[in-house]
Image 1 (tube, one colour):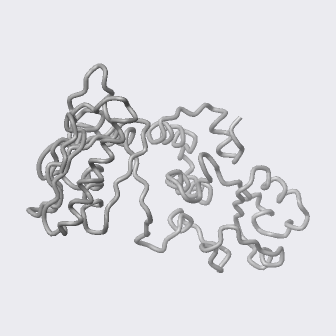
Image 2 (cartoon, one colour):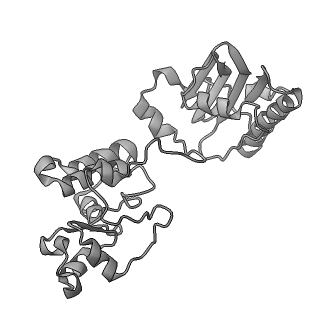
Image 3 (tube, one colour):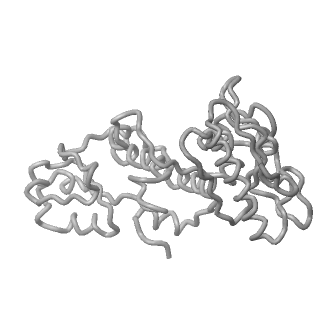
Length: 281
């Protein structure tokens, strides 16, 4: 293959990969590097060797061999991902795309060479610092268990009909009355107060015992689809079982979580708004 000036990107594909596919990966890596060069107006610096005039790539590979055990899938890969740029790796099945990404993410150790995070060897970067620079969104994920957040928090859904396939499912008042839940958790700001004040709900156990709550909402509702679901488990456990988790400081937990995982320092007002599912001020 043609070698990109200053080693911006090159790869040698080895192992059981078909010859035609090897060429496709080599050409794709080469073309990606050429696109970066054109956008930046100069050739990217060699991995691990930035200069004052050339920005340090967020993530890069320096002559890396990727593979499993003794089986090398990709050889001598040198590739840089600059900050603020969208890059795409294309190729047919079986050419090593997944192996490359696993190596970039630290899930596979390189057989040779170095993975660099902001110019630093990945082996010297803490998990926290790595997470600040690199995030991974899988195409699809599957849970290894049928347990829900509510199950983990020690609760039981009064609705025995599955709503997994339709998060927007609605139910009649008659159904809710027949379930007679001990606790009601709603997803809209102000809705808990409306339920408590509505005579139609007065005979339901949760309303009688003032156990109607609004689910917290930050970047998204804590109860679904995001990293904040880790906070949801703690909030739900403390809400359902205050006798067991009365000393759990959910405000402190939220503040620490957002600072550590989202690089954002919550104010007291932010936390109050999140816990009451209000939009940001």
